[in-house]
Length: 399
Image (cartoon, rainbow, N blue to C red):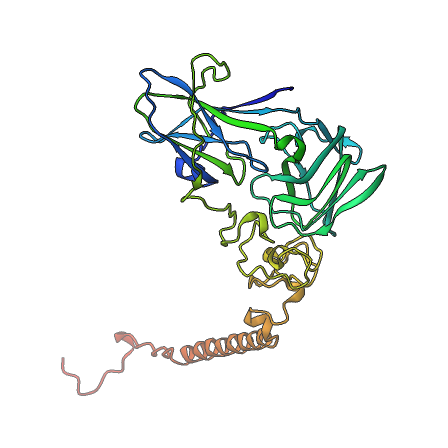
């Protein structure tokens, strides 16, 4: 029997603005507790895990007393080696979709005037059996609105899943054995995919999963798994977790329980999870979609002017420049009633001009009349008195 071991060392790089423990933990849907172990020195322990088909292989080990993140290593052993696959789009290989690295992704923008369509051509080195695949979405991304699956089986192409709207990241269909697969996705919001993983049924049934981390004496740990999206976090430095020397293998599989702090990713805070939100970037709790195109009305673009309705001051009339002369929030091209009084009542400027002319004329007349009144009030000059020598002597003058 061939044994294939996949070891993924879960050591995440330090990054600016690292998430707080509560924020990181809340992205994981399940958890379990690893109680204190009977050890005297730090020891690598191996915890057996249940079937993880369709789940992300990301784990978060938290030292309960300090709430610090502990580096861990996920290991998967197959009795039969999985069939390697390649994925191409328009003849170009998209290796990042099958590199088992959730930090890399492929982005498919939305055409300005239509719904996006991406066609994935999947090729295995040999036929494999599958009844589902997982769309590992990047952060702040919604599921495609339609998915169709075809398989090259028995020398002919057959449709195994008619076009349908997915409600989960795991897309299921009747089991088919084929080497070549075709997946078409229609989308109305930008689509970013970390991984596109087929769940190979003939391999999945014969595998074992385990998780290793360095445990300290008298210390309890909580392990979080089944993350809704990839969570970049900072952990402690990892020692050599891959060697089988001095490893304490726990005999009992832990009991999984729901993470009480789990919250679906909700970028716009409208209480609708991103993966099923028809408008991820703009809050629209009503999810109104009047034209039934899969894109919420608030982030649709009815007039095709490149500005989404939520930001468009004339959502039904093209106006890329968004001109709004009166600043009332309604674009000029659709503003039937202007907000400025002088625009609403066109006669006001003429009345104002006429009034100004009348007032100016009245002031002019007042000034003229004041000047005339001042001129009348100026006194006449008194006649000059004769000198004493010119006076006529009176005969009665006494000397």
